[in-house]
Image (cartoon, rainbow, N blue to C red):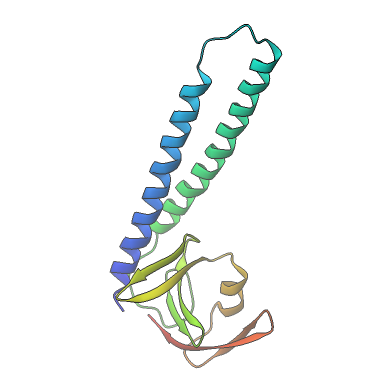
Length: 146
């Protein structure tokens, strides 16, 4: 497996996510800058709801920026055990331990990207090829690590 390609795809997906949130925040701010109408309290309530939406989008943007920062620290070096930056094949699927951004497809393989804080990674962390671990009462065998 080409870990550099997987890392590049993951970084690209996070960058797209950041751009999406930045654009959405800009659009929401633009709609919030309308001049005050004679609607009074209804207008103020609408402005407050837009501000809450901006705050929510900003929180999601900050999360994506944190993911981007974590990805900067990852190298494509091979791993001998399950750790941050490892690509792990179990009998249930392929998992890239980087940032939780969902599924990516590389070399015609579906790979689930998972955060190091996820219960799945906590269950398999530090294990090596041939080891087993249990998550949600399901045993998984580690078949390969890159």
